[in-house]
Amino acid sequence: MAKAQQDAEMIAAPNMLQIKVGGPISGADLHLITAAEEAMKDMRSSFAQWLEEEVCNLEMAAADAKTAGLSSEEGERLFVRAHDLRGLGTTYEFPLITRLASSMTKLIDMSEKREKASLGLVMAHVGAIRAALSQNIRDSDDSVASELATELENRAIEFAKPWKDE
Image 1 (spheres, rainbow, N blue to C red):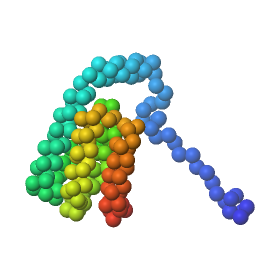
Image 2 (cartoon, one colour; image 1 turned 90 degrees about the horizontal axis):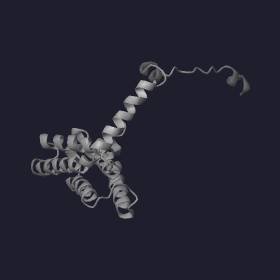
Image 3 (cartoon, rainbow, N blue to C red; image 1 turned 120 degrees about the vertical axis):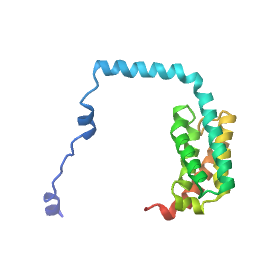
Image 4 (cartoon, rainbow, N blue to C red; image 1 turned 120 degrees about the horizontal axis):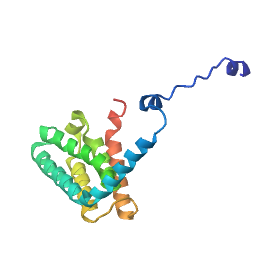
């Protein structure tokens, strides 16, 4: 065993991100970061309205997909809306919506999945997202919201298992 340990060589990989970024953050960059943070604070009052519009778009896409089927073009649009919300939820200070949208995208992120996905489970995700926004439930501190999100995630994970290795 000791001999095998001597034959090993450790190689430290270069930090490619630091190389691409150009080293440590300069004072000018810190100023730009501060300015961006201030701009985000100014926009914060619009977050609720923007998120409402996004959730309405999700609901319209869900209604269209319900009529045409998840494997249709409308099902693809529903995926795009859920994917957008996955990124926007946390940005707009609703990490629970990000969590729910992420779970939903696991169900319909590929056409093969959309053909077999449960419309009822997809619609349950849409309803949970609407409820989180309507009830101003932003994160998993709410025990009912946490339990619902966990159950939806578990069902989405179970459904997606056959595609995990793809």
